[in-house]
Image 1 (tube, rainbow, N blue to C red):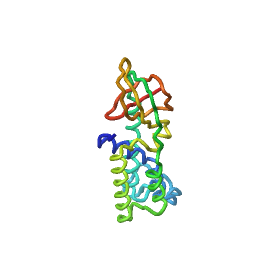
Image 2 (tube, helix red, strand yellow):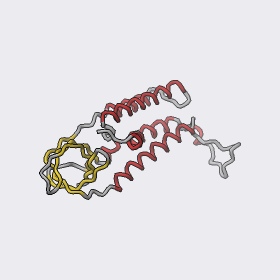
Image 3 (cartoon, rainbow, N blue to C red):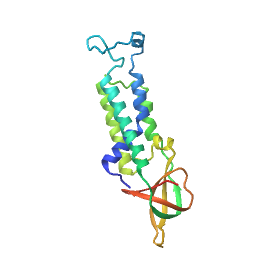
Image 4 (spheres, helix red, strand yellow):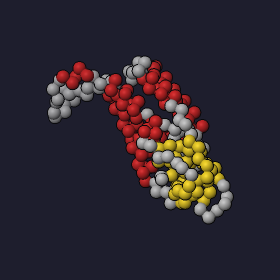
Length: 192
């Protein structure tokens, strides 16, 4: 299953919100917190107590926006079509794809070291391409923390004996039985 490119990018970037928070916190100038707060903001006198503020704050805001859009989009889905789930197999999450960038962030990635930062961005782009092509973009720690799970399911529609196979993103645990689902691109969204 492949998700559309823009949707997949949104889900992927949103899953790295904790990494953006870690990188942001590593770029805070903690010594500047001893200075008094300046108001009104005077560009000649006031400083943002963040090193590489444009990159730090920018990445934080992009990942936060993508995370919020993902959660908001999932909340807007109201499953209406009834299905009967005949078989369900939980797809275990390989968190190594998401853990490696966190480990790398503690090994000295800084926004002002352009060569390392560009290399890190290339690494993330490669991770995205792999997860997108393999259909695993929904296997991320943020959705797991919000109690979403991915299943391979065998199902049929109410009143039909035709059997279908697919993937389902489920809020909570999935037992066999009747549910309401909504199909979004190539994935079933089920909210028991």
